[in-house]
Each structure stands twice: as structure tokens, then as C-alpha cells.
Image (cartoon, rainbow, N blue to C red; front, side, top):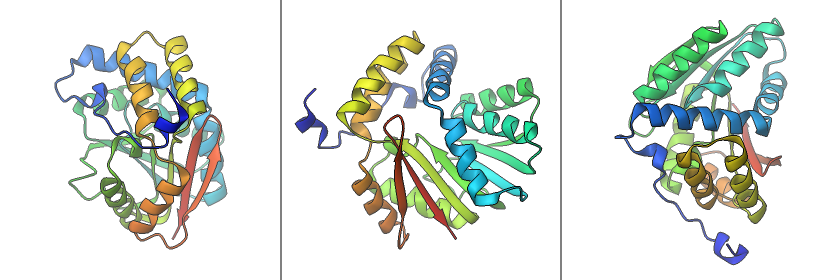
Length: 233
């Protein structure tokens, strides 16, 4: 794939987004994505950001489009080990994902409040200090991204935190290699590359954030070819 071609965003339907996907196949793909997440170091990255936001204060965190819940459950385990008064909730449009989150949280011995919510069609659950999402925006059009960011802003009393892929040749190469090394799921093999092709650049994400009403969005890059957007109320 040429770098010239990657300069233009190519948003495609991903196999994981098929509402008719068989639950067993879906769960295998979710497990593969969880392994990719662990390899990316995202738990360490997000826990540090939450620490910068809250320190050791009590906070309520909502993870939007949480998938299998690997990130939110890992954060809840980190908070428990570090004796931090952080509580966590998660929402996702998929009933299969919601079941997976509950099962993962129960197996880890942590509490995560799980709700089935369509973030594009419904308001997000209220009562949270920090609202975050991880690897969700690259599934959406620019207008949908602005809508989700606006809803996150309305639901967060303190901060929003977004992490996502950055569209680049390096990101594409990493997605190709990591997806094949870390999972046998053909869905993940396909979707990992489609995700990079549909991802934003920092300039494009900044434009979506401004459309959502963020006057001065702060976006930084992180390994491996990720972007982090944080906004404090």
C-alpha cells in the first residue's frame, strides 16, 4: 500500500460490526483484540492519564463502546491494586460485548457497571467524572465522531479521554504484523487493516473535536501509532 493512498481516509464496514456475526466467532475476535490491546500498552497509557486527571481523588469513569471490556477491567484491577478510589462503568451497542464485559469483570473480581447503549442514537449514561473511549472513532464518519465527542462532553463532569489509531504507513505495517502474530482470528486480520485505513490523522481529529465544540483540543501521539485526545471541563 502506498503512502499516497493512505493520505485519504478510507472508511469501511468492519467485520466485527456485523450485527449477524456468530457469537462464538465474535468472542474469538474480541479475545484477539484484547491481546492486541495488551501488547500496545494502552492500560499503562490510560491509567497514567487518569492519574494526571484525578491523582488519588475519587472518580467515576465511563468507557464508551467498550468492546470486550479488556481495557476497563484492567483499569479497575489497577485501581484496586493501587488502592485508588476509582469506579468504572462501561457501555456498548453489542449485547455480546456487554455479556463479555460482565464475565471478564466477574472473573477478575472487580465491579464494572455495564449497560447496552448506542452512543450514536442515545445519550450516554450520566453521573460520571471522566468519559473515555478507545479505538472507537475510526469506525465512524466525521459527523458521527463529532456527535459522539459532543455526547461524551455532555456526560463528563470533569474530563474526556479518547485514544485511537493514527493513520500512517507505520501504523498499517504494525497492524498487519501484530494482528497475525497475536491472534488467529481472520476477522481481526481483516479489521486491523481496515481500522488503520479508516483512522484519522491528528489534524482530522482536531477538526472533529472543534466541530463538537472543543475550543482548544489537546491531542498528542503515543506508541504504537496512537493518538490521545484529552479535554478538561
